[in-house]
Length: 246
Image (tube, rainbow, N blue to C red; front, side):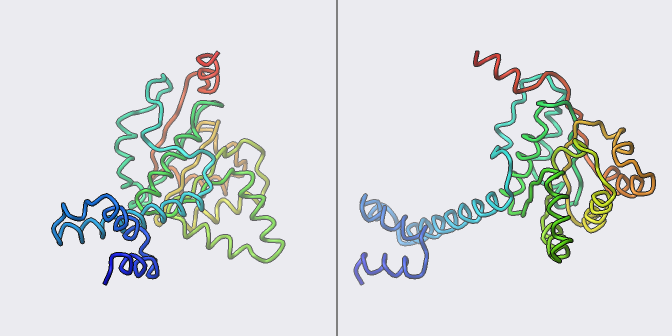
């Protein structure tokens, strides 16, 4: 069998990573520098890496992150009360395995969303499905789903995500229907899946945001006791970067 015929069979079997690696070794002559075992290992590794990268890209697209940011890109130099040791511990994604929550609070521009997206990106790297959503848009979508009969389907989609990021919680008033939806989401995820919530308001004020003692007790009970908390401070990162660029 000729090398070209072998290459075509790889393409036909959709072994794209292996086919690209095989073609490169043929064109560069590196195949003569490999033993048979080494060549097979190289081709298999190339196929594995190609499939991993394509799967990762699908996860990142499905997550719908506001920012495409990795943990390595988080700015640790700014004074904003960001615990570097905590970030290092979170980078191994044990919090996803243990279904622990992450609560990130702080003023506008402190980097809450960026950190949440970077944590979500890290979860995707570790092969976990993630979904990012603005709080207001999430509840609006669920209200439409209730109206057209697809509410249960949307809840199941959310439940399947190992990590759910609810961004800007409490930025706008929360109506009674949204409060109940939030409780239902957290009830489904409690002890099973991780939820990351960002908010301009400190956790101590979330009780007032929900403004319903019964629902507030139930919601906070499901997110606070098994969570990591980051309370960011300092000037807006946007203001800092604008000053630097100017």
